[in-house]
Length: 213
Image (cartoon, rainbow, N blue to C red; front, side, top):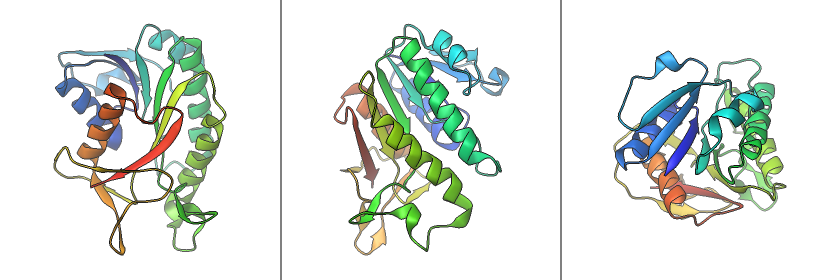
């Protein structure tokens, strides 16, 4: 496939890029600073601002899917507004490019830990992640109203960490996966496996899903 990828220099995006290239897909990375990415076979890099729908549309034309691992930075004091501004531009740009398949990596905060209770609203949710998680929840609510895109929203498990690629994972939907009484976890490499599996064999079109090892 020919995939347009946003956020390829980040923690999740870099793993997705590696997985896509490893499987032989062609990837166009949309990056504000293309110099951050080294040349690799199957990789093209174009300059594009994730908050500019017109730039995204121009770069995404002709691709089979757009994957967004966009994150304006956890230390960004404006992460909430910047995340939403970027997400809106990415969605609008994808539609303007005529690309129907769209996969977005969001957060675990919008997963339901009890009926009507999402993780981000619990007292123990870390304050330093809250604004980003609230923005990702709003983005999920937005994308659920989309009927022109074949969208998929992936919420990572509660614990997402570095680690080896096993190629194995469990699937869930609206609630976090657990390991007994403990939160489920996954390596970022296996999260990338789940993302590329969904692109190759769509099972969650116009749905949210989650994963864990």
